[in-house]
Amino acid sequence: MKKRTCKGISVSRIFSTAALSISLLLMPLTMAVAQKKSTAAKPKTNQTKTSRVASGDDLAKLREEFIKATNDYKAKLEKLRASYEKNLGKAEDRLTQSKELFAQGLISKNDFKAGERAVAEAKDKVNEVNQRIASADTQIADTLLEAEAETKLARSKPIPKGGMVKTASFIRYNGGAVWALSDAWKVQRFFLEAFKKPLPIAVFGQGAIHDRWRLDHHNAMDVSLHPDGPEGQALLVFLRNNGIPFLAFREAIPGTATGPHIHIGRPSHRY
Image (cartoon, rainbow, N blue to C red; front, side):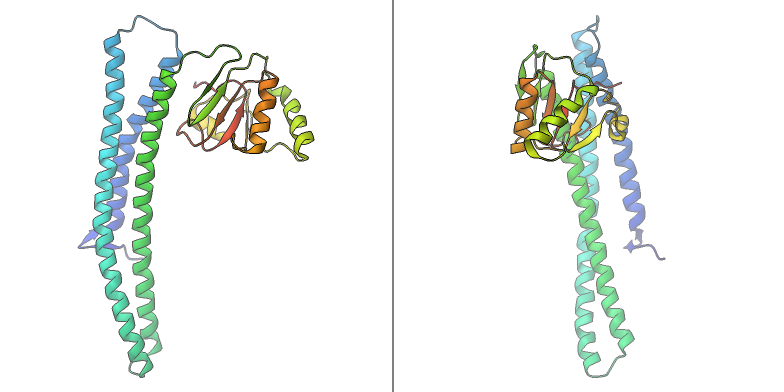
């Protein structure tokens, strides 16, 4: 198979080189985020305020570098897209001419089909670049969302027993009841009696996603319900009435939640 090229440059090489550059930038960013969160969970030491500020500045700098690299990658992709769209236009013009020639019997069916394949291949190249640009936009959005979530969590004060914190992204209830995963049957029985169907449990205990994010989820379960939906609201009321702690996510938070769901149990700590 021939490699796709643009003006003598291998497209696959551009994609792989740019992706590798972004990955190398993302690696220290991810490690810094994990280290920052791990440090925040430990008891206070004699660490100076200056060093804490420096750590925050380093993390912000890494994020800025990652976003800049991603934007540079997008700029290269947009140049490729312009070239591919130009080639697509030419291929479509040739196909239009081929249709007329084929109708007049001046070219063979194979020649006509070759023109159709050329248009299809040109469209595939444009679609591929569009997908990569969209992926780059998602990476930038996730980085900004993670920074926003960390800021919100850092500003939040310790929640007393029975207390609750609400933000646009999540709800946290610090129930006073002693919770164990073996008590899950109580929640399951409530939901079955209330809605005549099983509780939609997505993850019971530790899951692969929690291993990947290094979250201790052994004594918790995730339920596939949006906290603002009728079933989600009923479940939250039940949990509060019984003092069962929970975290209800309204949206995805990179490194914490893959999407809207209700986490039943104490918050998962990083290890």
